[in-house]
Picture 1 (cartoon, each protein chain N blue to C red):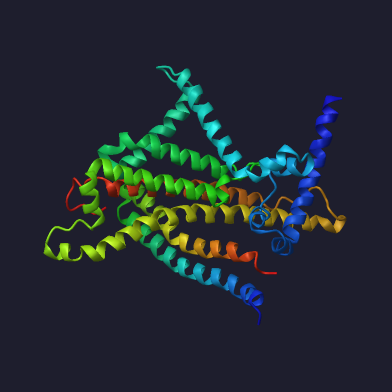
Picture 2: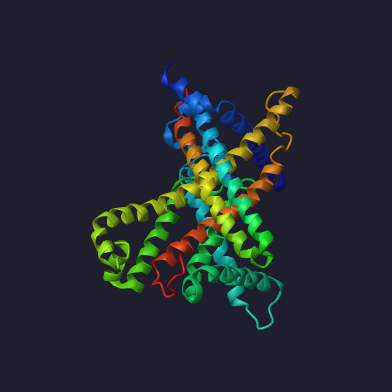
Length: 295
Length: 77
């Protein structure tokens, strides 16, 4: 009985999902024109669990659907917190396999950041490593069926980029002092030519500082969105290939599998690039101890 | 020619042009990195990391064209 109650909604949901894919993708161009701005963005990707619950159940899930990116971002955060707490509570001198994996990840990240930051690494690894793992989990959520990559909406990557922007500026304030920060913004003038060029250098540096988070956010957003739309498009081709046997088949030929593998790779690279660039922005703000070494 | 027609015609071309540019850039960057790795195999790890970051920078230019595509896609009736 209970199984019936569980199974039937699931089946209808799956069917609904296939229909939604067919609906949203098959006539994407027509729909996008009809639907106003905010919905046009979501309609290119595979439906996720919240989307399906909204279609089937409605009510509360309709409100949740409007906040789906935030909901999935929270899910990723909660997952990270649970893993971290599990490892922290039950840590041992001789680590078990689970603790070993987590320690390996932390150590690898530390060594990676050490190549850029040098002896300052220990101070900034918690922020940068969390950033990397968080973005990686969010990117990979696009590959898990019924989940959505929150980074494929412009909101999440841009807000992460803004966090990095303010963090790197705060690092500049703390390590260089206000005057040192202004000196850095003026292009670090040392001779008379440098001081003459200050009125020219300040606007250039201000524009450069603002361009950093914009490019950082848009890069992640564009890559993950493109990848998810690619997967959705090939799912649609698979569904369409089977539609010669009748309209609206619930399953399709899984043409999207190779693109899942591609997505696995691209998600990891994009997370790495985001973390590496954040590290470089912080490294640029630190006082230059090694003269002659170009950053 | 109305503007939806013009958009439908020019958006794919825009992505193609951007892809040609970053294709040349990527070919050059990766080729040079491979050459450097062949010359100094012991520095392969560092070169590879720098290459991936640089490749992401180059690739981002195509992605900007893709973002413009997404933004204007809804306007094609």
